[in-house]
Image (cartoon, rainbow, N blue to C red):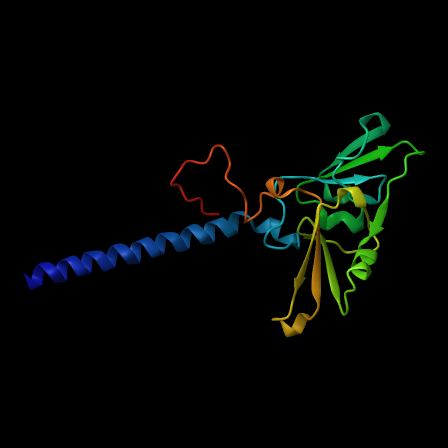
Length: 193
């Protein structure tokens, strides 16, 4: 009986060790395959599979309030060499540049003005849909602002301050870590990224 228990414990511990070994290899291969994406600086719950919309070369928008009849041109940019420097970090899923007629005015705010409106003190980082921006003077259409998250950095003393993340996407369209169930998800199945 002691031999049987010893053999069962040995088999069980070997199977656990093999399962852990397989999971470590899966994680390593996942990060090795996705290494080029590391050039984009973003928050953990950043948007996925959705391009950034730029209107009239300097306004970030979600196009919800734009009349299609006012559009004079659309350009889709995926090549990093053609992206303006202040939008390069927003290019992970591409940029859609939309040009409107000259007489169309869009109400905007700069990220710096949003920080002042929130009465932020100290160093502040700004992000759009989870992706950090390099220029705080970039404009965002006020109609496109669906939510603002203020993320305090009180635990990391090396980087004191806060991050202001402006959402132009509804929670159902963000597809981040806190995503809602998709209609194709099977009950009882856990998806691991």
